[in-house]
Image 1 (cartoon, rainbow, N blue to C red):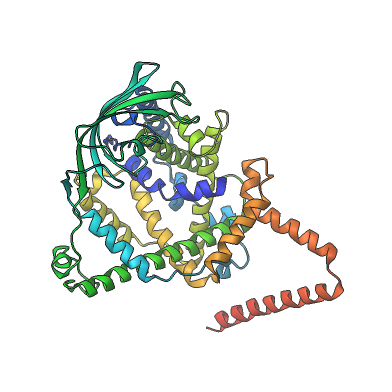
Image 2: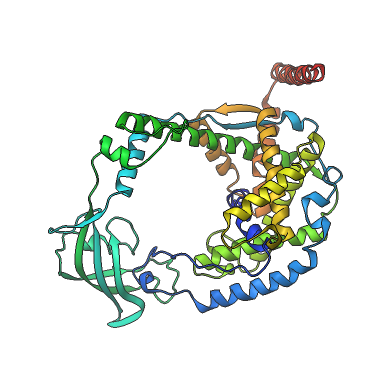
Length: 480
């Protein structure tokens, strides 16, 4: 669904805005693309087409950016947000529903500790047959119709059970000994990304050169001290029990952060649904948000060794005809969310002062080895730092003022499943963004046909009680 896509990528705009905003040319090294769904991926290099597209997109973006980079109305600080959007009447008492704050269980604490033990465990070679969880150093050669195919051969350290290679590859090595060679007759998935291999039967000849397992350390006081952990009071963690308390505290903090983020996301969704925008945003601002979104998605495509179009089709379920339009829709939604936040900041005096902005810039310069001074940062990045401070101020205000109804986790999941079912027949992405409202209105229409006058009276009374509660809250705030 489009709403979920937008929510997933909104936070990632930060990276691209900062990268685009610094003076000078930004360079970077692509991360290891991984080897998901294929044995061939271990020896695969980035397609030249993706690299060329990235360079062309960067050049186009730089040219377009020059047209709005120094324009005041390209940024939130340069617009009159209060006149651009009409907030809902009770925006300071917005009502939202979120899943109840999760409690940390003993099982989660132990699982976290075991994961840390495994993460700190060195590999050691073993003299036995391969089993699940082992790391095997292999040489492999893939053949299609008796001929080696491109990218199907190489050497790799493979974790058995990681599902890194195609189905059957890792399972076919269980029970093998060191220096043993096996022929694995496998079939590539029907939906495999390389069309020439999709659904094809191949043979991988694999030689196991080494078998290793993790030498998991013992959980004791000595191990805990070796981690050099400190609690929130800066006291060293020196015992297993203290370490368990430390892990629990961290998990509690993460749950609280997740809960807060859920409240903020729900508030933003509700505000976006109930706010009315007055006309079009400035063209410079539209260009800025489109540029940011395109840069971010282009970066994702490059890091995944693919093209922008293919990323949008495979990950965001776009089509060849509408993927650029979809990017524009993502950018527009993010822009509207930010305009709403800016309008609240203006109404409630939540904008950061100049001193806070200068400190944020100084901290950013200090954290980046490639930047020597604030003069090396373009206006784009400076405005982004300023906007981040504003957003955080408004987020704090929303959490303090919104009316939250907590739902049990099971109930929340059931509601989401029901909403998904109700919207299954929706034809367009635009409709999908509004399915929750549509389903609710449809349900209300059906209920109204069946209810008798007594039910209606009860509904009217509930509405009056709710209005009375809101009025009471308003009166109390005014009296304060």
